[in-house]
Length: 332
Image 1: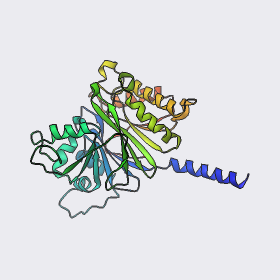
Image 2: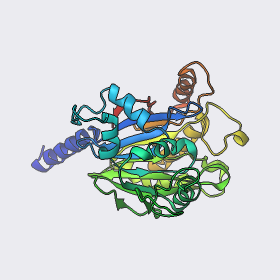
Image 3: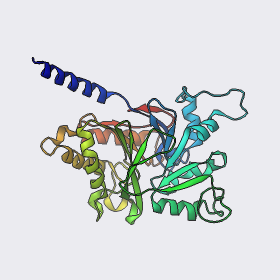
Image 4: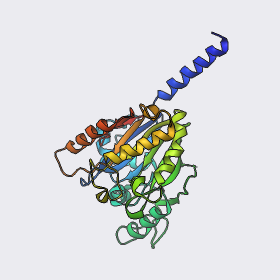
């Protein structure tokens, strides 16, 4: 073997070993889509070596932080035991540096609203419609005091509204991460969004609630998949947060969500974009975090188990499905 061949072999080995390493840590504040109000969508994400988090949606917040703390998800954060405040408040105030809100439905903002009285100044990032809804209908001095930087007086100015432009990568202040935003469609054209998070050349994508492209006039998911396809080929995409709200629903009862069959269909389309000749292996071992399961008050975790079984039955792509549980830490 020539020196050049040896060097190429080493680089290939090193690249593949490096790509398999975890780059992000995720703390699950809430993973459900309702009706249980204490376990709604909320995820902290940070580079693996950092405790400066961004909160992806905030349906659950302080309650989720408390559960995660009891599960030792924040052991690397030092806490002053003599403080008169609990550690959850310290994490909320000092270690959540920003919020990324995919859309303004209650199951994605409830924790943020209720915990605002204990929070510290920081930005809320969202597309125009999200910021407008928070300003006009939530932090408006009537439903809740105006903790925002726009809208009705008096303005408390605790949260600086940051309006996100689509498909533009911007840094997230006081973190090592950047975000790139894409439009999604929820029910009846209601705007939702996907966030592509980058740190040190590695990526995670978080989809807010979304309808499947096959039921929408505009193919918003297709645009996101096309953006992600080269990242898969370069082994830079570490994980995908994607909702599976239902086990199986008629299309007219999805209300802008995915069920198991539509989730798999979207991932099959993604695989074709990554490798049209070999789609069955294009997404092999990709980590997909299955989120926003709407448990219809069945026995605990029974519905999640049914969805897991259905996805595995349909999984002809070799995807690694992960089912986040409230209060756990996941490294990807």
